[in-house]
Every structure is written in C-alpha cells, then in structure tokens.
Amino acid sequence: MPVRTARVELSSLIRDVLLAFFLLYPTVKASCECGFVINDTQDYYTHLIHNNFSAFSPTKPLSTNPKFTRDWAIQKWGLPVMNWATPLPILNRPENVYLEDGHLTLRQEGYPKESVMSAHNDDKNEIDIEILTREFKQDSMLVHYTTHPALDDRGWLIDNATEIIALKGHRPSESFQLHRFDWTKEELRFYQNSKVVHTNNIRVPTDEGSVYMNLWADGGMWSGSPSTTDVYLRVKYLSIYHNTSASEKGTDTAFTQRCQRAGGLSTETVCYDVHISSGLQIPSSKSKSLTPFPFWVLSLFCLILAVMITSLP
Image (cartoon, rainbow, N blue to C red):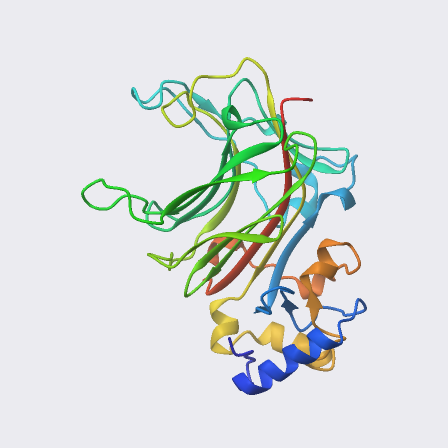
C-alpha cells in the first residue's frame, strides 16, 4: 500500500525500497513519528493504539487514568432475561475491570464463556476471536475465528467464515498467549503466537467499527451453563496498528507535518512492531492517533494482544 501524505505521494516502488531498507537496517532508536512496519508482513501503518498495562500506575483507577480512558470505555449496561436463547440476565459491572499485577484484568462472576476480542460494527461486519472455557484442556484450548455474517440468507454456514483451531503446547491458564488478526482489503489473517493459522477472503468487512474486549455468558446455547467459579481474562499488552481514510487519501495533515518535522521517512522515524511489543521502543504520545476509534475508516488494520484466561484469582 503506498505511503501517502498531504502533499507528497510516494510511489509503490519507492515504498518497497524504503521498507527493504528498514528490513536490512532495523533500529530500536526510532521515534515512530513517520509510522510503523509489521515485521513479518512488511505492512505499513500510520497510526497506533498501544496499551502496555504494566506501565500503568497501579494506584490510579482505570476510570480516571487518561492512558486508559483515551482509548477505552468500560461498559456499564445490563439486560434482563430476553427469551429462551438468553435465559440469564447480563450485567456489566465496572468493578470487574481493573489493573492487577501489571495486567488489565476482566473478571466474570460465575459464567463460563469468554469472547477475547472482536472488531464489530453490525452482524455483517464483525471479526471475532472467541474462547470457551469448557473447551480448555491442560495443554491446549480451542480458539474460534469467525467473520460475520457466518450464515447465508438460507441460514446455512458460509464456507470458511468460521474456523476452530486448537492452540497446543501451552498451558493457557498459566501463561500468556499472543493472539492477532490482520484486516486488509483483500483478506483476514488470524495468528496464534505469531503463526498464521487461518485466512479468509470471503465477505471481508468493509465498514468502520469498534474494538471490544469481552468476558461474558448468558446461559444460552453458545455459552453453555453457568460456572460456579469466577473466570479471569488478563491482558498484558495490546497494539492496534491502522491506517485511516485521511492517511489513505493523503489528507492527514497532522501525520504529514509530524513526519516532516522528524526528518521524513527513515530508520530513525519508522518503528517495527517487534520492538514495541518487546518494550525496546516506546511510541511518543505524538506518534499515536488520538482520534476516537469508532470514527476511523479502516483500510488496513492489525490487532495484537497477549492474554491469559484462568479461573484462579
């Protein structure tokens, strides 16, 4: 994808040369003012939301922490019993979202199902990574990857819209796992611990949306019967790399000016995702987008998060 600015549009050839240069001469001193490159795909992004929860103040409540409220809002709504499909009420309690031991912790009181991460607009533009605790085994867990709509107009499953893949060789309740999906115009790619496990190029979502981290159950057919113990979802860090409609059109003036002031595209101004996730680079506040997420029109998107799910407090 061409790197675009408000005044200068780089050709695809120049872009490829620049990315090759970055690959040959990586640096951990970059300021990130001119964007980000994903190491394994060489995809280029102009914006980033990055939450390293171990760097958050442990004494400041999330609801008053600007590092958190800048990017996230804790859900507070509830629903009564609706019908046979959702036989239990739903209540989102702010006290079940908190910071503990350097991790963002979501607690579910007595329910068995986790929806780890999704990007959602409506039931025709939704990307899900979901895990059911009843499918846990000692050394593996099943991960459900779904692109909605998963059913056609006749109610039949759409080929390749849903894939269930086991994450093996790890103790999911004792160690952090890395989950990721890349959303491009051409396809969706899902990763387990940095390895591609599923791709889908059918009915790729096209509308803007929001990102949700959920831990919930309603006793329905999908989530199953309620658990008698609490369930915890712990998030170590989360990164959302993305481009916007403005950066695609070359009208993102703030990004263009920021990059120009930093000296333009170079190994000193473009960061690699692997350096950010490892903590070698910390993007400055100026290099991250402060635009509310629901208003971003995404054409290229990469979400990476490290999570652990457990019934232990």
